[in-house]
Image (cartoon, rainbow, N blue to C red; front, side, top):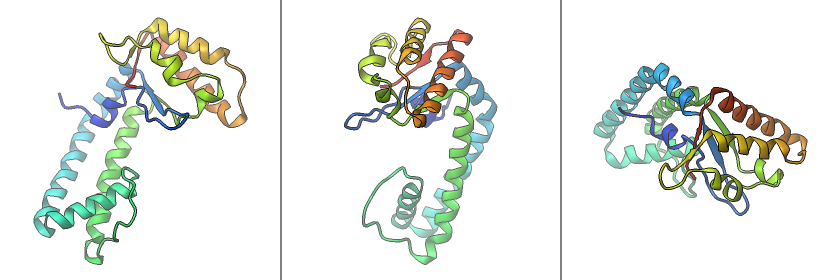
Length: 197
């Protein structure tokens, strides 16, 4: 079965390290899989449309020009950061906007799939609570046998840590509440959380 790679990898704690931060995404796989079933046809159609367009664009404009357009689309979608990337030529602007629109359709479908199954922390919440994704959450994962798997009893422990943490600034109150509600949903459903760190 073909899966949505970006969402599957984010099936859940996906991390990116900064000096003192660690971005994380948590997913409840039962909700993710149910959403995937609903949106699978739309996803497959959107991927086919995008890939067909890219093939036709390469045939019409050549590999180098098509690659430049893809690079500009990736920059526009913040998948890529680069300096001194030349502006696309006027004659390729149409292709740029068409490919950008097709990629945005895929992003929208991916967001729908993840909407109820995911919690995202930009990396700033846990440090404000005196917790760390690596120090406090990583030990709650099963490790070698089942990488990224946080069993239900550890989800409850994590919920307790977040719930008992000291009060935080207004900016983080909402994010903290979202995390608590996400963890409570997993506990209510009796579902583990899947993580990649």
